[in-house]
Image 1 (cartoon, helix red, strand yellow):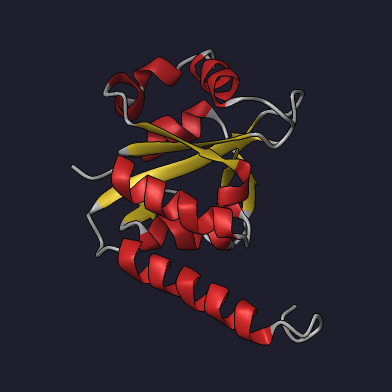
Image 2: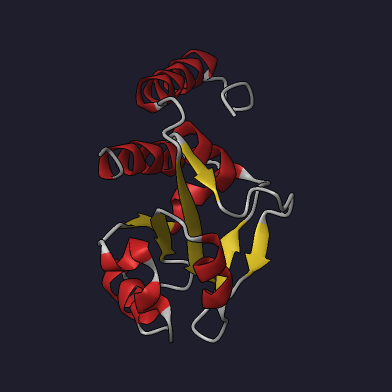
Length: 153
């Protein structure tokens, strides 16, 4: 875009600043797992990000291993049962895809039958990230920083 709008120096400086933030936030593998889940709409069931796509990169850069990494698909329909089988140490809950607030997304997730049996839930290891944190944008960098901070143990 910097080339298109003849603002290359400004665009390059902004991109370099984002790269530095990613480098500063990135951490080594922690041995912890995570499931990044979300609701696509108010009518859709629980979904998760798989091993493809930006969300998987954000988890990896945060030192976490996605419990759905084996799926090369970026978007998956999942169930609470599959979460229970995979036993993620952390739940990353995306919100705002259809306008819901963080509180509404949390309440909807916690109302799922069986979710209370997840150790991540009972231990309070739920991180809420805005929907933009899973797409190519500066919000993804802020999401990475927030995730690293929230999962520091």
